[in-house]
Length: 376
Image (cartoon, rainbow, N blue to C red; front, side, top):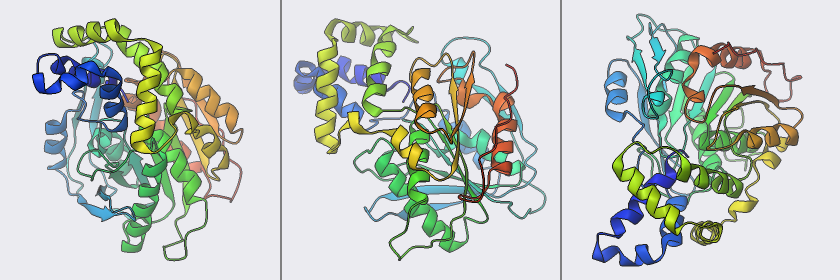
């Protein structure tokens, strides 16, 4: 969910200069609610052109699968092999934008490798499946077929009411069962999600552990789940994130103006009104979207990872999730925030790979203790 508020602020700032947007200027809570209800754009942190150029250098399969709600969900699969990936995270230097930057090179594998299992990857708010390309390739090099999904309202997928993980999880389950029937999901299925995608992964883990309606493929062998920087409660996460976004250092003059405008108009009542408006738009109660309750019901082994310096979704959310589900395992990384944590393959790849290798298929054993991350 990073930069959600700044996108809303830009919308409000534009309203001040456009006569046709007078209603939005007069109703800042409604304008913010619209951004809470749907992304309304793509994060400027996402290097989409560079990702597409890299994907064009290796073979992949992709397409759309329609869910029961009629949402076309885009998927892309990479087969396992030696991609000769070279990855370097550049976040140790520079400002906010550079802290999300990395270098990545790879080549097409010279020979096919039989998958040891499948990992599905779920992205964050205002991102898409391509944002997890480094992880897709890293895990493919470790022998897994990796499948990235664009969640509803993101990337190449269709639009539908957001569910803050609940409705999106239903999409994920529907897509995976159809892909399993086509042979794309093979062996044990592992799930990894980041931020908004992490909450979705937890809801999906709960739903995959339940019975099907009798008309679906039932032999999905759910293995390990990794949830990075998930929120515990959607309404609380919004209330934590918005004030932080108003205080963070802007990256441009436009962002400074937008922040100044919102600081002038902002008070907790405006945020409560925006959340209530988003509730009506989505036919949800964001304050009752309880990821911890879903986690406690999930039969899979779930590894929670949170950055101690996360100010977008504070570390209290990760600690609350861990307390809600004693069977889950929890890692807290000092020195990492909401933007840096998912980029730290250097610290986290061995831990994630070991977790998937050692977690049993659902219901077949105790959850292991995770491998400690590398020092930053």
